[in-house]
Length: 74
Image 1 (cartoon, helix red, strand yellow):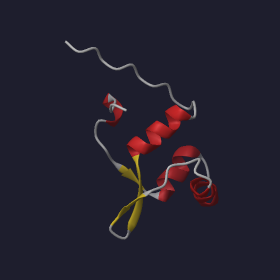
Image 2 (cartoon, rainbow, N blue to C red):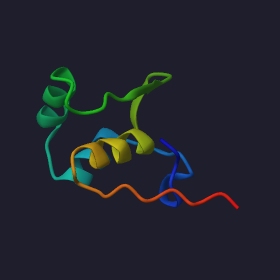
Image 3 (tube, helix red, strand yellow):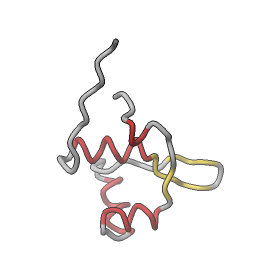
Image 4 (cartoon, rainbow, N blue to C red):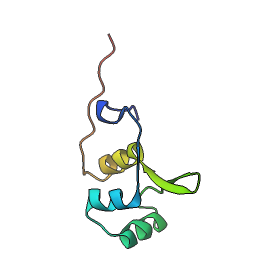
């Protein structure tokens, strides 16, 4: 996947931010990771954070967002 304009800058979200973004609870997030239907967080030292690019791809794969067309090369 090529990064889109919106996600060309990689950032990471905390669990509370992921829950707020999708309107779900912690249990749903961890159950979905266990069943491999939601992206697992990355370990950054002792912290677990979700990649904005991984979440965007999950949204596209699950019909929550349209994939933006790639720009044509000049």
